[in-house]
Amino acid sequence: MCKTIVAALIAAVAVTGCTKSSDEGGRAGNDTFRITVPVMASGVKQGEKQTVRVVLERGEGFKQRVKLEVKAPAGVAVDPKETAVQPGDKGDIQLTITVAKDAAIGEHKILVKGTPDKGDPTETEFKVTVSAS
Image (cartoon, rainbow, N blue to C red; front, side, top):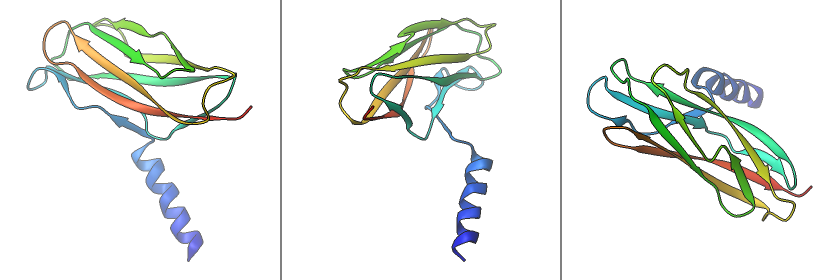
């Protein structure tokens, strides 16, 4: 019974994926975008680095540049902190998370905000779990 439940949970994660999307930014209709980030917290040890994938998903009518800004708490650095995704770009951004040797152990939130040239911005967050080195 327990194995069946575990198998069902694994299948559900595989089907739904391990990402979450922001509310829509931009304008109404197809002229919108979303930011997709990991759902599950990324584990990083003090003094180490990890890469996290963030995706800018565009609606069919959305042809604008989007400025992405990333904010992290003390002890956790993100590179790049800011970038622009151009209309023809793929929208796949790799963020490098660097955890300081003296960073607080526990869960930390990373905020990702997308602001288009025109229209409404949107934001979402993902979590990084810092553990002892």
